[in-house]
Every structure is written in structure tokens, then in C-alpha cells.
Image (tube, rainbow, N blue to C red; front, side, top):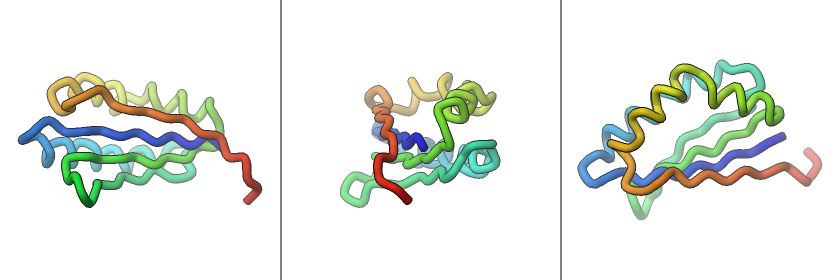
Length: 97
């Protein structure tokens, strides 16, 4: 299993638009083959900071996700919405279930 954690910081005044844009990804992504979970979180102390916690069956499923039309469209919107580049970290599960 591959875990992805992505953190996005909204530009000032773009917090709600970023929230709506990211939330729109959730139902589509959860239907993808290989998606174990895809959850969006908002920071309690910094409301303009959002974090995705995603689990994927394997790297192939994650790579396919990145090529989905809605993910490609998202990339075109990010420059206008983000205060800094998206931070992405990949993890692999090392404990047993």
C-alpha cells in the first residue's frame, strides 16, 4: 500500500475556493480502482491549510490517479489558488494490518 500526504496552503482570500476545488475531487477519486481512501482535512489552527491523506493499493493506481482528467484540470488552477507549491510526501506501509 502507498500512502500520499499532500498539503496545500491557500492564497489569502482564496481559502473557500481552494476548499471547494479540493472537495470536488473526493467523490470522483473514491470511485477509482485502487483507491483505498481519499480524505481531505483542514487545519484547525490555520484554516487556509488543507491536507489530503490518501491510501492507494499500489504505485500504478496512484500514477493512474494523477492522469485523470480532473487531476490534470486541477493542475491548471493551482497557480491561482496556492500561496506556495503543493507539498507531497509518499509513504509505504511497513506494519502489518
